[in-house]
Amino acid sequence: YSDFLDKMQCNIHANGYRIPTEAEWEFFARGGSANDATYDPVGDYAWYKTNASNSVHEVKTKLANSLGLYDILGNVSEICFDRFDEIDINTPITGADAFDENGNNRHLKCVRRGGCYTNPERTDDKVGGVSYPTGCNVDTRGQPKPPYEKSLYGGLRVICTAD
Image 1 (cartoon, one colour):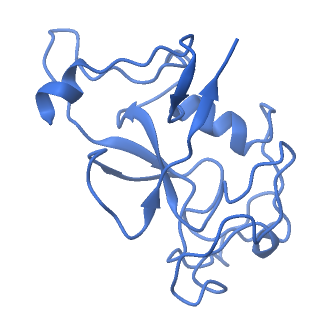
Image 2: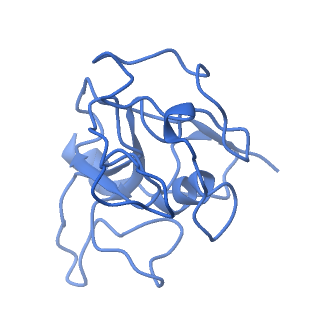
């Protein structure tokens, strides 16, 4: 897989189905805003350790966010197109590059976002007055995994780019 994955690039302008970049995922999770979305109480929007009975749940059994998206936080973490790397305001929307400035492959692990049903609630630290489960908040980046690796805790969100 590594030779194939090394050559993959995201063309956000092509028509068709794909997984989102990390920047797109965060935009969706923030409800289409640059500000933090409020998921309060978080248990109305996300499955996590306290309310999930240690299992994945059917999609659309919790409330949607302001863009009408379900399960953006919790249930399963979602793989993004980007390779796991440091990101900042200058990172392009197509994500962190798989290669460094010398053309060397950084790694094949992709970013995961959104948290999952095993994340415990974080009661010692609140974000905007809401106790989010650890990992089930907008800005947390999950454990990177190769995109082809099966996981009991991860999934993907398919998006469609259209004219």
